[in-house]
Image (tube, rainbow, N blue to C red; front, side):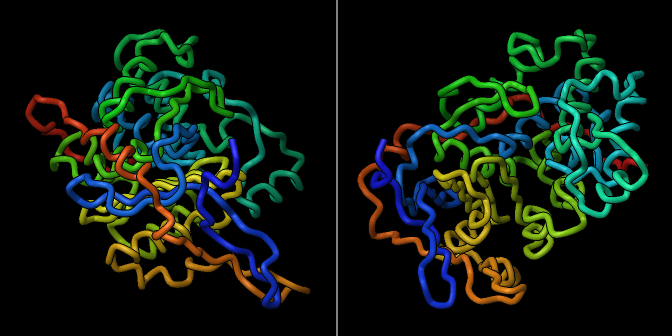
Length: 353
């Protein structure tokens, strides 16, 4: 592998000096599913990490039905910051399934929310599973397993019925077979996809028929963005707040998926694993195809500080002319997803208490 296969996506400038550069790949889909812009290697498989949580939440929703709605469904699709409000919903999800947090298979962790973490440390608290940013997803997997009378002790096994259903949902929405199987940081099965396929999963969620489980996942995430991330400076939450109707979910190692209400979709992978420029890159990509992003101008640069004061910024710098024939290859290797053939669900979304 050589870095020159990838495109320069962002620069870090300090007092007029280019201090660092971020390379990677980005792909933009038109509402009809065609690749309209790409840079880097969009047909190369990536491990999406938590960017795939909306699809994992979808598989849980299909299995559990109205046991997963509203805030709980948004939390299932999110990477929460461990705020008390997040924990309250996770506990309610588990209690509704007759379980306690001891059933969670994710690792213990401190909450990412700084005020909450500091309060717990001062009070002599300990790291625990329910504060870990993936506990909402794990709770949803347990809820789905109980709803279908599947075993719960091994719900993270790749051969568990829920994980097999999840793998099938990933391939269906991405329009391409799973390219690699791995284990995510939280212990859940992880599915590798070409970046173009990842963009298609986000497009599929925002363009799904009203009332479908796909549409309900997207609706919950956009209605409750604080449950996808948090209340204090979470990039996915901030982006969805700034641009109502946009769907956004990031993952570890510099991955981000975004879809606009009109069906345009973007997927980003920064190969050095840094997430700091991914939102700016995605916004630059949407802007390049005419999607209005003016409401998110504050997110298009990340301040670079010197002595606590801004002295520069991290800014997207995508050279779309560098896109190669690999763009066409990516387009031809994936196809638009098909939705389940049954009539759209008649379930209505209800707000969790």
